[in-house]
Length: 422
Image (cartoon, rainbow, N blue to C red; front, side, top):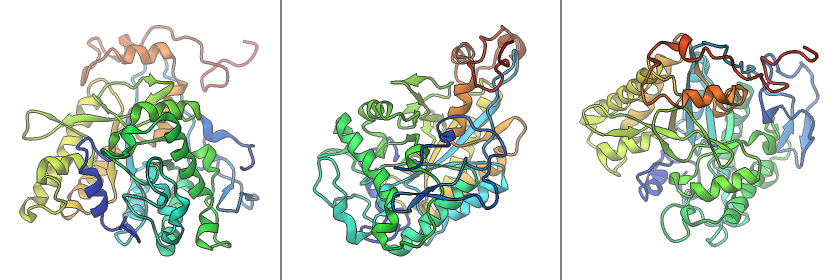
């Protein structure tokens, strides 16, 4: 986002990310389906009453549409290949990339996760409401927004959620590195930051004066179940805070392509290392990291190389997908920003990957919520066995043999559990 106004082609985010090469990475309590698996066909009935929350910036509108109930693997069943596409600091600006990738997702049977930066819903003139930990009031390394930018971002958030996508958080001021960066924040600092991120979402109508605008159609206290920290810093204390607050997953680390496990009670759904075509080392599945290893911290490198760099990212992601799809079937986690770095090379790469993989047989392109719901529905013994498979390692005797042991009974209420009394 530009220093004081609308999101500006990712230039400020690039400068912030440059600090770290790791990436950039009170309502009605009824209807708490947002906390866990939901049934298919759960769109609100036509004419269903909207119950406003607080000042009407958000509302309870029923269970989220277009979510499908996760199913427990049957004995010997090959796992589906999950792919998660996620966006850090999601907001709509003149590039219209939020709206564009919403359409890309719909066209390719995909849902995604949008990590909203809370300050993208806070106007510049209200910046002093933000009290960032270890920084002066009104500070932000990604600026704030204006009324038009907030209205456009809210529109996209509303539509994205109604289409089955997830709205997470990328927190607020995006402070990286030394001098008060998130890597030094305490558990209490993180709790404060999370509370402020929620508050800006829940009060955007008051803060912009748009008191008759349509609300966001969800209760953010229930919708918010996971996050990715700025520059992938501060994960240890963040996850402690997140676990205490009841969040379900974190995507702030760097993993190999293996099956997820819980850390501090949260699913560790971090991005992963995939092949980097033309190099002997692997690359994190994020646009920023590909850029740094191609054009350095310059967001607009040699134009003659833009096509090559985009192809390199696309091919690396596809190689990572193929070795999982043909191997251990570990979920592939991909992170990005809405940006125009190197002539939009990385946006093209991501779009081509979506089009290539999300329509394949046995592939599910889902949000982090969808993946977490599926993991929660599985037999823990099955997941433990899946974690014994290395990167790209398929079961030597095939999936039927590998997962043929009788699973433990499904917990009550989980899809696949026996009926009561049986």
